[in-house]
Image (tube, rainbow, N blue to C red; front, top):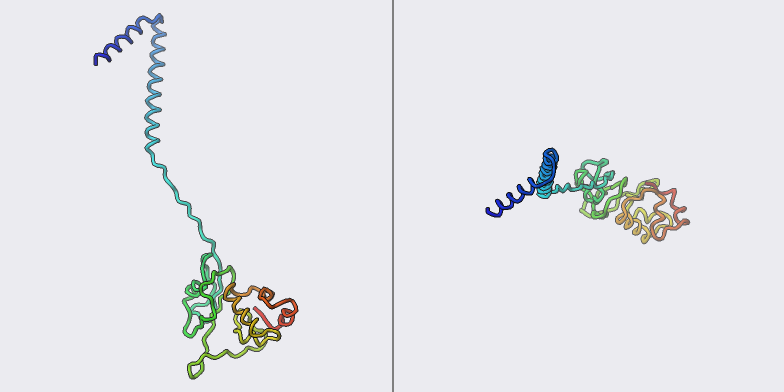
Length: 202
């Protein structure tokens, strides 16, 4: 307390000893007050900003959508919109799940879907003894996305080995988007494809 009083007295003595006019002293005092107030404001604002918590806004990235046509032995056939990472089983569930008598054994239910493809669920055909039997071979061009290995084997130049490869290709890659895609199957070259092109369809 004594030090504060001594400092005040020294400051007062210095003020009166200044060789300034009264107006100059007033102007100097005004500048000192402005500087003091500015310093107080800057310090107060700095403390407020440092205490403010930065709000973190999460960024949500929407998954791309795909359109898939689900048909065959399902409860609600139709075109469905699914997320880009959906699998065959998701498409079947979107279509109301498989219908009674559906045969899912020929499908890879875990395969990731492609935009614009068709998922066809076969029906299980059994005889009077409860044994599974092949469907009747359709007349005319056969659908390479629905044909069984036995139906494909019936095509000229397509033996049981290549027929099995076609079915396996569908399981892994999904439905063929065009007849020309048959040439992506190992063992089907340009000559063999030309031989069967008129006998198959999508």
